[in-house]
Length: 224
Image (cartoon, rainbow, N blue to C red):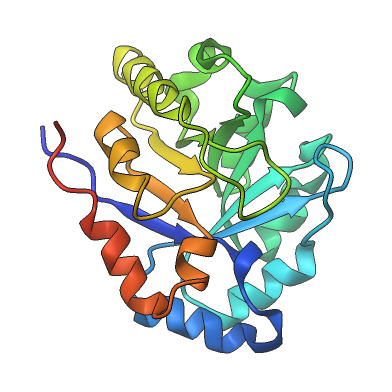
């Protein structure tokens, strides 16, 4: 079986909103696959970020699929408006979604792909019963809330165990990693079984963001 293609999803959290159209055009020209949009409510995580108007603006400015990560309590309140605004994927936190099976299927009914996210301290088995329903499984390799945090090294083993769970359950979900992804960390995550990578500071903080996307992709070579 061939390895899945690498997906690089730069994070809007690190973009310059004074030149958003230019930044999004730069990401497209650099070969980014998706645009990752972190929605934070100041309750589930200690930060407040984007709402539906930002999703609408990004949808208007770019052809990149919008990978929307809901770091909010009661995420189901936002499904219809965010999908309507242009979200291609909605990813909800296991810790904030007691009725996870129901919410994943509601997202799909609305026409988006559905994903589950887990914080560093959340066990992999929390998604075992819905693994076959997932389009994406997102592993947080930092504690969510702020960009620019250092990668938690224990995440590599968690990614490996997540890949084993997806394979064992026959899930076709993409395995995504978010937090501290850089030239120094991306290959270990790829080698552990991840295929989709959220990169904020690594891209936007690079001297040449366009070439950095290709550099990150190139670090995902053959698995050990």
